[in-house]
Image 1 (cartoon, rainbow, N blue to C red):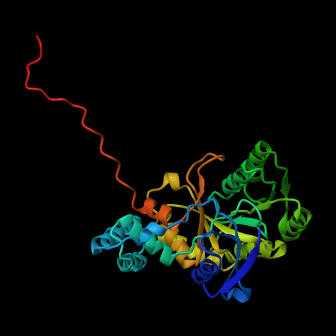
Image 2: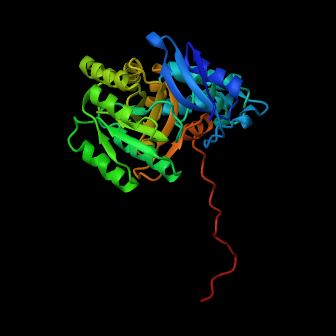
Image 3: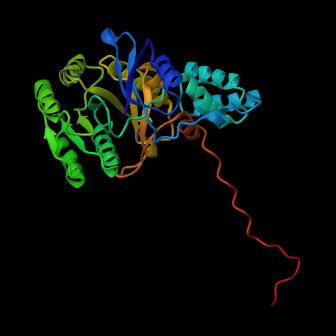
Length: 332
């Protein structure tokens, strides 16, 4: 896997540099805030991706404004803040695409970055971070299972020593996957665990404690973990939350280095406004989503077209009427 790094002021600009130089088939293997939080640095590789990120059909001819209005209405129903909904609707309008779903995908492609997590070859361990109850441990288990099913060698470290039963819950999954769970207590212990695992695995995942993004001491502790072990923090957030709260939390986690958003519980929510607001406020690339409580499935990368289909679900095909009418009287 050939790696190359790109640095730009924003995630969207860095992703555009990747697309221009490496094309749409590039895999984003690492993202991080540049020194002093000035910009974003992306490490990409040119290798066929598993995710279907093709959006060539987005550029079909003719687009009446009704598509943009449908997009705006759908975004409103998802609780997307009016300013963001208007911006995306304008992008859909200027895309000149008649189909509302494809117009929505074009707007999302223009407004957000998409960078799914690789199943191997990441230059730094991925640390999943987030508020309590966001689904970090389950996300770690799902990512590990995906890689193990592809015959990858995965290492898992947990430093979640706060929540009662957290280690035992993750250990139950790692036993099934045949993975030895390593426990770390504090920044120095985590650094040692990561150093010991270097070069031994195709992918290293770190489960962190659930911390309050609005409490300074919690964020200081989390930043100490991130810096001690030189990990890439991935923000895990459950779908369906209040858009304003999600945006403020995303900004707090982005301040300590998060550059990607992993969204959980898509199977139990009907509104995605919080997800979009968080990605915009934190300048986070949308990576993967979880839509099932089961470890072995329900995990998939998200792309502009797949997200558009969630925002504007397709109407089900009508069921043919199986009733046959006749003028003949029934036999007595």
